[in-house]
Image (cartoon, rainbow, N blue to C red; front, side):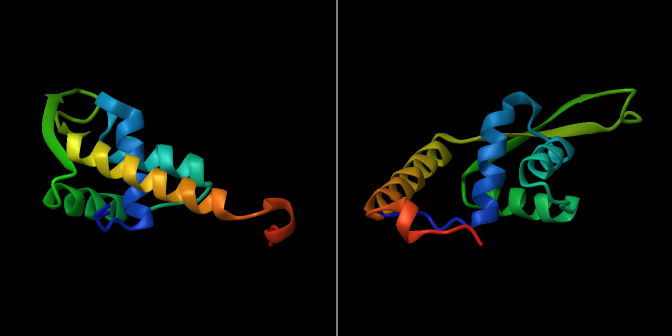
Length: 112
């Protein structure tokens, strides 16, 4: 099994794109991740991750319609490619195997 190298932050951004579907644009991705992580993120970090993943063939993007709310600016909407879905499934399987390999979670892991 060959796993595409994907950093933890990229994986979280990619998963958020999949969850948000047609609402997956920069600000919405940032807001969703901030709520889930309970942490502030910069728009630049999100945009950089999105660009890297487009270059890796994990995402595609297209501009939506211009809206008055955004001062006539159009949103760049991101979509995960079939390759991205394959990579996410592979990563999930690896994580599940590792978690199941821990003999007794209650005894071997403690919250810090």
